[in-house]
Image 1: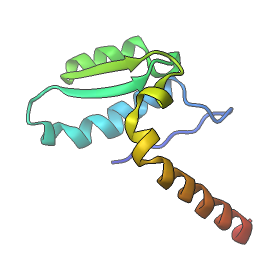
Image 2: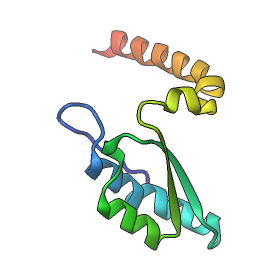
Image 3: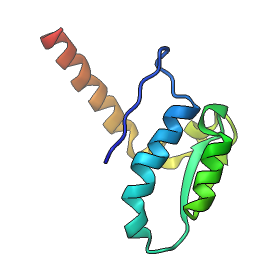
Length: 102
C-alpha cells in the first residue's frame, strides 16, 4: 500500500514521514529484502527524524543514512543525473493538466 500525506503548509513533517515508513516503505520492501538490512538515504533535515522512526527502523532491520541537511541535491546523483529530466517533464505535464482542468 502506498501512503500519501498532507500538511497545512505543504511541507513534510515527522508524522508524515513516519506514516510513509510504516505504511508504505516497510511493508513493500520486507519480502524483497529477505531478512537483509534495508537502507534509506535521506536529506538530514529534522523533519525526517523522530524517536519513533528510529525505533521502528531498528525493529525492522532498516538503517537510515542521512546526508547533511540541505545537501541532498548536490550529493544524490540520481536526482541530479537521472531524474532531473523526468522531474522537468512531469512539471510540464502537471502545468498542462492544471491549465485544462482548473
